Structure formats: structure tokens, C-alpha cells
Length: 337
Ligand code: KDG
Image 1 (cartoon, protein in one colour):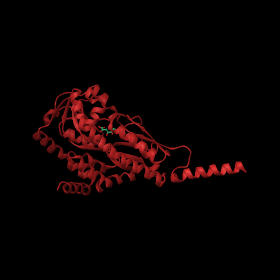
Image 2: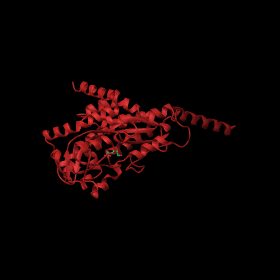
Image 3: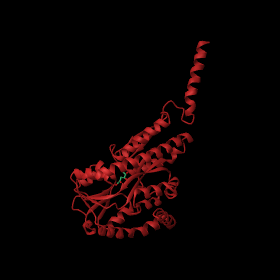
Image 4: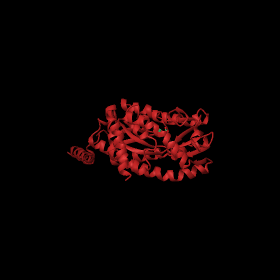
């Protein structure tokens, strides 16, 4: 009798423990989630990936475990995107710019000078327009959860300070694998060279390219100051990152599991934006202390760059659809009232 009673009691105990986690896979082993990203662990992207992993493990009672894998160990953005679509990898965070080949509407976020500040960026990205663009991913096998902040992008190079447009002439400038970035910097007179982020440091170090453009945070965390002398402040575009899930894998999750990931993603977004903005505030001083020669374009030269770059806007509008383009311009006008 004792044996039967003991077995009954222990089964009941297990059932009680399992009850709150009823919506989770009842296997003894936790559900493992590979979350790939391109920057290093010490970067703002790496810190936010770690935060996301902690949130998921806590909310699922250890039933879901995220392995955050950085430094493009699972491949560059475009390779990870394909792995998610095929179901060979569960999650990633990467640039919206490298997604344009899969979802053309993502090119909206490449528009030079689209946002004047982070407040506008948050409002549009987290509002109806940002969510409409994210929804387009589903038909391509991806689920977008939230946008993180990469930040406003600035120019670095090893040749000379960029104080006027003409200084860009002939500079071999690495850009993301994205036609708007390619067209933008060709329009400005640079020799634009598309490369994955994972190849960028060595391309700068070997002078395969002379320069690149990224937010201060990335210039600092990827140690570009070691191979770049000049930093010219342009803030020429606000660059988002996006947290992605393989739709093949997502559709196999319970509603509870999907909620854990969606809630953790939202919490990680708020953490990442604050962390990134706090770091960006200090990064410029750090880069100066590391020996970079920093200059800001004069309002006249910044105006010339803005005027020249807006030439690419017509192509962006045509590419993403004029309805989405006009809706975005109207929303920005409303926010600026
Ligand atoms: O995985 C790297 C990407 O997140 C990319 O967005 C970083 O801004 C970047 C760049 O210049 O490639």
C-alpha cells in the first residue's frame, strides 16, 4: 500500500508543480532557442540579447532556454534570416536594412533623415506603420516581434575629415548589403562597397575599404577606432534592429510559449533602447579619448548632404508603395505639430 500511496503522492506533486506551466512543453528537457546576433557580447546588441534570454527563462520557469550567440557565429544577418525561414534556427536580431531583399517595405527605415530624433522613431516604429511593415514578414516565413535601436549612423574613415560633400569623393565606403545605402553613398560621391558586418573590421584593417558608417555604440564596441582616424558626425539615418522568429518554429509553439517570447521581446526593447541611449551619450567622449579626430558638418554642409540624399526618396517611395510612403510622411507631420 505504501508504495502505491508514495507513487500517487509524487505524481500529484508533479502535477501541481506542472499546473502553472500547463502551456509549456511537458518534456523534462527545456525548449532550447538559438538567438543569433552580429555584434559582440560586450555591445549594446549583446547586452540586450542576454537580457532577453534572462526574461524568457524567468517567465517560463526554465521551460524555455535562450542561447544568445553573438559575433555572427551563426552567420551574417542574411544567412541567419534564411536559416529562420527554413526552420534551422529559431531566433535572431539584426538590421532591417538587410531584410529588404525579403520584405521590400523594410526599405522605409533606410530613408535618409526620416526621423529627426529617437522620440519620432519610437512612435512610428512601435505604432501602426511599424507594425504594418512587420506584418509583411509573415508571408515570407518570419515573425517580427519588436524593433530595437541600432541608432543614428555617422561616418568614419582613415583618409581625411569629411567636412564637406566633396570630401567623400573617391572614399571606398563600406555600406550594408542594401540598395538604398548603396545608392545614397554613390549619390554623395563615395565608392560604396556592400559587405556583411562580420567582414567589416578586417576590411578596414587591410584598407580594403577606407571607411564605414555606424552609430557611435558600434564604432566603440567593435573597436573601429583602432583602424579609423576620422569620425564625421552626420546622423544621416536612424537605423533600427528587429527581433525575428522563424515562423515555421513559432507556429509550433503553444499560445503561452508565444506570449512568453512576445512579452520578453517588449521588455528587451525598452531595456535595449535605454541602454543604447545611455551608452551613446558617453560613446562620443570615449571615441575622442581613444584618439579619433571628430568633426561635425556645418549646417550648410549638412543641408547640402540632406538635399542630395533626398534624391533617393523617390526610389524608396516607389519601392515600398506610395500609400505606405505617404502614410509615413503624414504621421511624421502629425508628430511634429
Ligand atoms: O548583425 C549586424 C547587424 O546587426 C547590422 O545591423 C550592424 O549596422 C550594422 C551594419 O553596419 O552592418
